[in-house]
Length: 440
Image 1 (cartoon, rainbow, N blue to C red):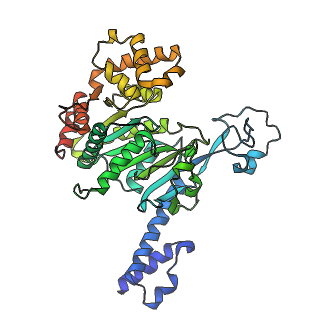
Image 2 (image 1 turned 45 degrees about the horizontal axis):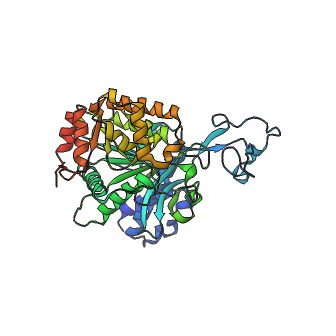
Image 3 (image 1 turned 90 degrees about the vertical axis):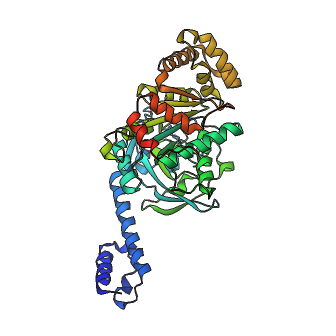
């Protein structure tokens, strides 16, 4: 080993904490090989990354145990034994439990790399984050710490959280189109990250790309933004010093009312609001992150244009309708896949109608048709509310694109996404994107 490298190894080793300095005794033996030098560099990078996470990222935890109807369960959903001493201290437990008052932030204890056992040794980066985390900080995490290149497009995929059936033709057109866009434009795909519903379909598309030797190209970036408190086996992800890797068992059969992470996603932001078993903690932070990304400049900074965002909708219930409605309020174009089921099909069937014909009666008929037995749980007041939202959605046709997988369809979902961006006047963005957007 050269004196220069030996000196560099010595300096780097001295910089490492004793807990990760595994090669100190060999420094003066002259036997330190290149592999050990690289190991030191790797340890130093990991130490710096862990320090950044611990200094910037928080989790949430309940600080007031209030017994619920369930035995030894707090109103937050966690068991009594999972609470700290301070949460159990108050003598008077008559005060009502409040999410805003009785949950506090502390340093995160879950981050690193996930290894999905028995699934081809796939790995992904992950971190448990407070639901109050600033989106700018998450963007810094994604680009500076996880080293993701600035996206040229953000594709937010939303829809049914439960498993649903897609006809083979529509499924193939969705998979091909989504991957084509992501690969040729350098897009980020954002989903809910679990192994169910629309998130599972996105994961399968990413998997098919990875298995296809004919496609080539780089890794598809699929970011799952999931609720920490609904994850099955999440205890295997916990280590205050980080897990490199955490061995995660996606035990779908044993998940019960919880969910497993989808092993085909590449990155996970696990949003924690201090509760257990309560879905939806990630919704607001995900929306804020999408707004934050939409304000950033394209990687080609000379173009002076911001990153375009498009929302792709498959299946879905009332929550998906709210997501579409709020996306359009933010001038985000939506692509709805007709034939995917439920709310996507309701919207697709009225998209070309005059608003005057989109009546409460018509929406009732379509809801009953596409939601089946689930329709019986819908109140008249909710039907009226959803009708008004659907009317508002079709009042902005420049923000709504319906993808119909007909026999004479002129392309996959990627064509619909391009059209959606053109309809909102994103010509500069589309020019940048289409430079690498070749139709197969």
